[in-house]
Length: 75
Image (cartoon, rainbow, N blue to C red; front, side, top):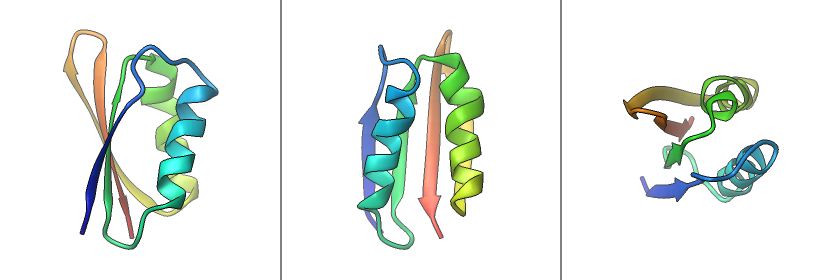
């Protein structure tokens, strides 16, 4: 299992999702991607929906004001 970090703070959709898609493509089974995001629509809607549509486990939590941590795990 490999854990990678991706900071997409300062980016807006669709660039947030495109960056996540690129990293997910390179992941192997059981790998984890930890995304730091400050764009609410990406953190609460587009990235979790992408995870659901692609069979990834997704855990989103707000770590501080305006910052989310999104953990994606490839099944």
